[in-house]
Amino acid sequence: MPDRVFFACGACHILAYAFPERHGQPGQEALWIRPIPGHTGNHIVVATDAWVFDDHGYTDRARYVAHTWRRARLAWPGWDAMLVSLPRDVLVSKAKSTGFAGLRLREPGQFLHDALPRACRLLDRFPAPDAAQCCPGYAASSTNGYGPSNAST
Picture (cartoon, rainbow, N blue to C red):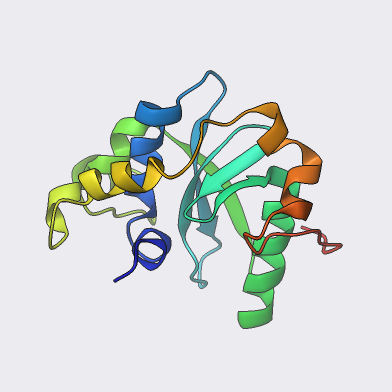
């Protein structure tokens, strides 16, 4: 399957694990979008206070959250989620991930092919984050699908 689908639907945690190797900077963390009980829509991203990175690239954090919540609520009325910070080592450990209620992640080698080298190759397509990419106006001019939104979170 294409990289964007693979890292959006099942291997997002591997991409979040690989990100610091290529573009790590202070203030970044892996965030789990953990739906409230009874709902689906888990996703793991890398984030700072200003931006979020996932398979789409960089997006202004406030716009990303607004867009994600709005889209999920269209599909699943009443959907809501929490943002949970995850230690990096949890992202590649099935055993450690089960220590977080509702989380059970596959290890890189549990995919058909080891997912970690594939994540590194995808990250090679993206530059390191900088102010020009991650400022509030960046998402509005990007083509990543997370443009301006007036939706509340």
